[in-house]
Length: 260
Length: 258
Ligand SMILES: Nc1ncnc2c1ncn2[C@@H]1O[C@H](COP(=O)(O)OP(=O)(O)OP(=O)(O)O)[C@@H](O)[C@H]1O
Ligand SMILES: [Mg+2]
View 1 (cartoon, protein in one colour):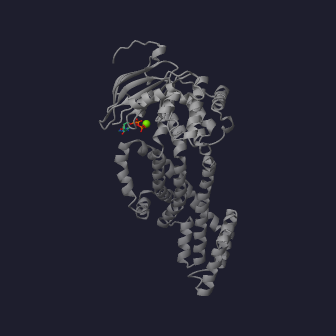
View 2: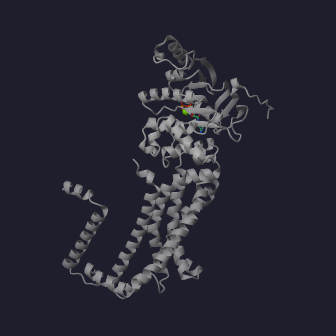
View 3: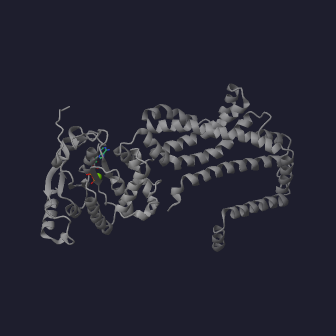
């Protein structure tokens, strides 16, 4: 038993991924076949596949996916651009931390889904209201990671730079950025998957005409459960690609970590 | 501020005069610390753990400001623009995201020195510490002794006039430590610089230094200055000589067991 596990461990990632995905499909199909579920309750992989081909052919999947992606990426970027300077301020200034962090922490007790309707009242543009929901979701984990990353820079490194009379800007560029980068990228990875959820929450609150969330709700009202599955799998694929992209970035930027 | 005569005095290259220091919690650590080092000297600083050796080194380097008293390096305060100090800590303190080469190059980069000349200086320093083949290795790939050599090369690359070492070999095993001591002497002879080195090892202090300063008390001060009358370069079996043993005994009895 263990020997066959070791055999699997030696295979490349894509092969094991393919294997586990195939296994998942098989189990799914078996559940559907033996459980004799109605197609509207639980469609099988083949039903979903047929539906997938249909929405790809008529272009609907691509249109709605692109629309949702166009909300996810600005959401992640804007969240990152706001969280970074704020995180730097919080890590550097005990006063700022005292004044701001209680609100930040309290704000995390309120689920985004509860705030989102407010945003749609305040913001006229459907698109920007959805982007803002994504921003709100990714903002906090990225912020927390930036603060943790900066706090983890050893005091002795600062002493080294001070003893060499480095300027604030040099300390930022040559010490704080590279030292905080690993934790920052870890935060960005979490943020990347969360941004997909954020955009979707935004679309649920504002289910107007466009986006995968809209497609999902429409499919549900029409009892097209197989289409619901297509949308879910597409969302998962988008989240996985975003994660993979940042993991790739991480591998390039943190090459020094692999040298052991 | 006391008006001071700027004297370029080779026998008083580093002057520490009447320095007091207390941390923000009010506990006084140093009281009336006074000593001076001639240019090019190699001086060891010993004392019990927690007595304030690292604190004194930080004051000399300008990282901490003394409460009272003054520090003059070549007639100038170490806070002034270009103190030209090299610093080595107990743990190598290398930046893990930079290669050995990149770490040694850092002081030059921070001074805006780039180009071929800087490159050649870094190469020469790596060669001096015997690591020319490891320029592209990351700190995680180096042994403790190698990493400490890189830290030494980094501390010397910008040609400082004062080298401050805080238990530089404290994290190494006994054998490596001994070798690194000899290595340090070789580098010091090739690369004249005034050295102030904190160490926990009395034999290491006597083996390397011209003079051993002993810190005692709470708050602490320099209570003894013990000269080491051994010739340089040190002989191979110097540790067995009577003079060496006498020095070791003198230093040991100077450190008060409280
Ligand atoms: N940041 C600080 N705040 C308050 N007290 C401190 C601080 N740093 C050090 N101390 C205290 O100052 C005293 C001297 O510390 P220092 O590190 O200079 O000792 P040391 O002689 O270098 O000891 P060791 O040989 O163990 O390294 C210690 O009692 C320590 O508790
Ligand atoms: Mg110390």
